Length: 307
Image (cartoon, rainbow, N blue to C red; front, side):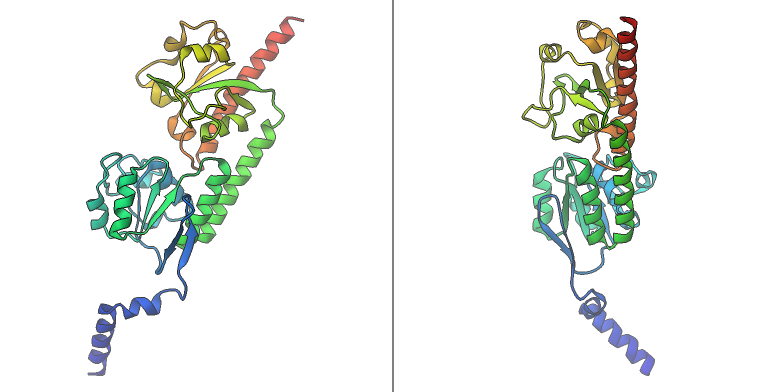
């Protein structure tokens, strides 16, 4: 009878939520997100939904991979996310599908997800963490902060430290490199690039390059062919996303007066590596650094041939 009474009492306590209060931390886990909001979790985070490919990678980097129960349609890395349930993708992410999965935390890319969706999720009462790192320091920072709220600080700190050490090794290698001017094409129709406040431009700088449109006001400005002609970059780089429909060499061949075209310095990089603000951005940077080093080597050979 005592055993039956014990389990009956336990069931009643659980139903009233008392057991949650006993097992919960004395103080909630809190972390600041990239909208400078203090996000807190009164109980351990166990169920996470991520709504953008980049933030999904960041959640995994911070040690929260085993807690992820669903992702958006476009998340594709690491490999494990491909088998997870999907809740739609921008601009058709389903708030109903998210709510039905009862997440403890929803991670949103504040720079790209639909603001109406995020507002709706907050009104429902879901715990939302906004992530939008715009530079390499921001990537390390958001990994640490995610680890804090998810309860995975040890993994997050180790991941952020390794990322920053990798960054520093690349920076030291190319900090004294001869500048190479670069036009980065993120879309061809209309022709679009990035300014200096974007992770792609940060990668260009890391490799000793100079983004010729770094000073543009929008983060993703539309530019004309005439503007590119006027800048006359040493190299033109494009993501492989653009190349699926148009070959970079064929597209730029008519503009042989541009130094990059005349000398054949037209390069591509996988879009997932160069455009996502995640630890893999350094892999994209390494590809870019090698490409710009090829430009330097060729320019050096040309200069030596003239003497």
